[in-house]
Image 1 (tube, rainbow, N blue to C red):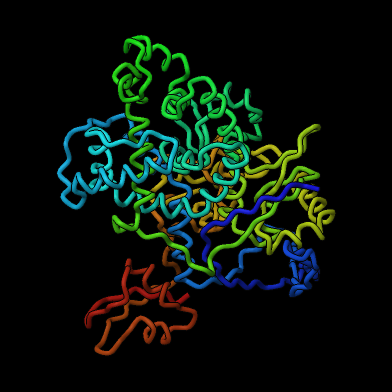
Image 2 (image 1 turned 180 degrees about the vertical axis):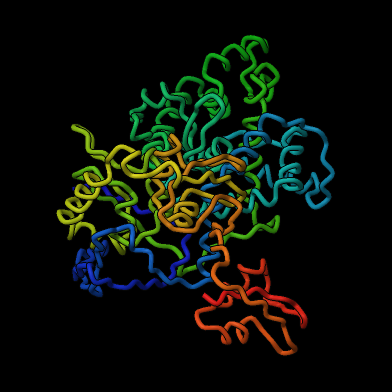
Length: 519
C-alpha cells in the first residue's frame, strides 16, 4: 500500500461552475472516502466530470472575484523568489553592527535567550553579535518574516514529522528558512537546490534522484528525510549541533580547518572568524530566526490559522506518463496548486521509469475521482499527448508568436491563462527547466486566444477598411450622436463613422464635417 503523508497548506476555496458543450461527455462518479479514525467508508456527493474533446477549451469557469484576487496574491508569494534572494543576501552580508531597536531591551533578550537555551540542544547564549542580527531582522525584515511565518504553517508540520522520525532536534526546521526561504525550487548561484539546498553529488549520496524529468531535491518529504540523515551524520562526526550546522553549509573540511586555525577551539563563536564568510553568518541567522519564530507573538507577528482554509492531500503512484496540465484539466484543480504539491517534476511531467515509483500528490477531495477513473484518464492523456507531440512548425506559424515581457507579480500559470496555452508549452517554447521567472525576462508565446498581444496588454488593432463608393459629407447638428447619425444611413455603423473620420472617442461638436459612405 502506498505510503500516505498528509500536509496542510493555505488555500482559499472558491466555488466554480462550468458549462457542458455539445461535444462533451459527462462521467458521473461517486467518491468514497476512507476515514483514518475508524476505517469506515463514507459516501460523498457524486461528481459530474465533463471531458471535452478539446480539453484546452475547458475555460468557462466563473469565480468569486475577491477570492480569486486573494488566490492570485498567495500564488505570487509561492512562486516568486524574492524571499530566497533576500535571505541569501542577509546571511552573506551580515555586519554585526550595533542596532538601535528600543522595542527589545538587551535585558529582555538575555532572559528569553536563556529560556530558549534551556529547551534546545543548540547553544543559544547571548552575545552582542547575535543581538545585532536579531534586532536587524526585527527592524528591517518584518515584512519578509511575516511571509515566512505564513508559509511555515504548511511546511513545519511536515518537517517536524520527518525530523522526529530521524531523532533530529525539531528546531532544525528553522534551517530551511536560512537555506531556501521555504522555496522548494530555490536554486543558489552554485547550483544547490531545494528546501534544504542539496548539491547534485550530495543529493545523490542521500538517495535523491536527479534526472531530466525529476529533481527530488525539491521534493519536500524526500529532501527533508535526506537532510535529517546528513545532519545526523555530521552531528556524529562533530558531537555539537552548532558545528554540524556549520559543516552542513560549508562542508566538514572547512569546519575542521577553522578549528585548527583557531588553536583547537570547538565553540562556533570562537572559530567563526576562520570560517567562509557565508558560514560566518549562517548560524547567527539560524539562531535569530529561531528566536523570532519562538517569540513571534511577543514581537507583534501574527500566525494565520483560519479553520476553513486547510485541507489534506494524499498520493497515488502514477502508472503511465501524465502531465500536471492534463491532471489539472481532468480534476479541475488549478495548475499552480498541482505545481506546489508536486515541485520535484521539473517539466511538469510525471514519468514512468522502471524501478521507480513516482507519485502524484492531490487534494483529498479529488483523489477519489482520479483513482476511480485511472484507466480512462491515462487513455485520454496518451491520446492527447500523441496528438500534440508534433514538430513546432506544424503546430504554429512564426507570425502567430508574441514576445512577452515578464512583469512584477507574473508567474507561468497567470501568463498561460492570459494566452490560453499550457504552462508546459511556455516552458517548452522557452527552454525553461523550472517555474522561476525574472522581471524583464522575455518569453516567446504562441497564443491560442485571439487578439492578445505581448506585455503592453493592448488588444491587437485591426486596420480599418478605407472609405469607398459614393462619399457624402454630413454636418453635425446640436443633439447629434454617432448612434443617431448611423441610424440615418443604411448599413452604416458607429464604428464605420469613427474609422472613416479618424475619431477615437464618441464626442461630437456641432459643425463638424463627417464623411459617410453611401455604399
